[in-house]
Length: 272
Image (cartoon, rainbow, N blue to C red; front, side):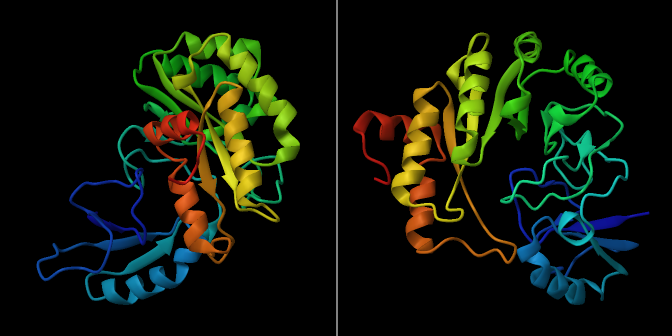
């Protein structure tokens, strides 16, 4: 069966093969048996419905994805809805953080070959699952954990196992000021074995009563305790950014590239 995969938003994880599309069909679109519209973000649902109407003239359309169906326990198929090398070995999360939309129970999936682990909370999986994952990764290179590891689940044993891999980068999640102590402990544990360039942190900004000063304080704190911080700007269920949007997005951009972050820390000024 020949399937066209259509995505309302293109991300760094999106597939780039000839059957992946990010808009309406063209004049010379090939013949397909089905069209799958994959919706990652809830705010893309209206665009996905519009794309459904546009693609119905090509083939029968199915619309789904995390924003539509939640995180289903179906097997993950490599390179189908994400680019080659990116894999998901579990879905859901046992936590119920107020700033996160993930509400599905944790389900472990079959582990397939890949070097970038996208799981929402891989460390919540069973020891057997994690053992199998590290066995697979022992044969890989340029390894990344980009899902955002939960700081409270970082242990010395895990840090040692990460050091044994051909690891490029691991990301921690620093979502709220209340998580600071656990975040600091996790960074100390990882930095016993890994460099600053290998330990990064997603720092959530713009949620709740956050301000630019508070956000910058957390980002600088993440740097000072030994990570490369990356600002993740909060968007609500409808896709709305915090206000004033233009200023928040400008601020976020100054904390999303390593070179800009180093320059910011050197100059002592953010957003320039």
